[in-house]
Length: 210
Ligand code: SAH
Image 1 (spheres, rainbow, N blue to C red):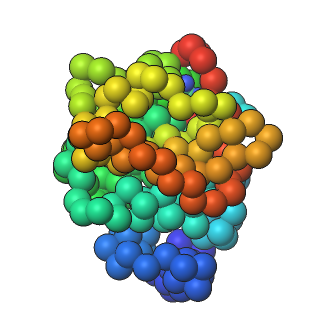
Image 2: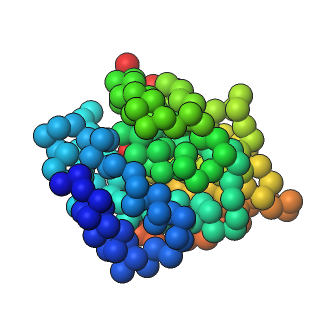
């Protein structure tokens, strides 16, 4: 179940689905996704599906994690990346192995606490986490040359746009019933939007939970 061969099959599927960035594929090959699930779900860790992590939230489908990471890195390496929606911390762990520093915000405290333990277990030391409403970003540590949002707002929060550095890229699902993955690039003139593909994420909720 947790074997290298099982992960190798997952990576092959990602390649078949069009993931091309070899650094992203390498990191997904070595990152143990089963560690991000409760025991009862761990046997399904290498299926290409979203899985429940409690609190009505889900660990994103591997294809979506790979795609978002590939889009983030498409115009070159990123040194400071803000992630909204830590959840299990799986996407956080993938990012941490590919960018300089990761700042991750989660509104549900027990999820954040578990994710923090997993970062320690995997010795990923370039990650900082914050229990807060990610719709407001994390201003104190910004601006960021990359932002990844793993819960969908109906409209992109102003605070996230303003914390994006010039030349920075934000990958974010936007919409209610119908959602699309968007890539926002901040230029000297303003913001450019590219609509990538249809996706399905849990909603970005306002405020922080206990
Ligand atoms: N990347 C995560 C996905 C988790 S699902 C993973 O692969 O495990 C999305 C997460 O976004 C949930 O944990 C949810 O609690 C969180 N979330 C939703 N609205 C939020 C907000 N306003 N601020 C911070 N986190 C939020």
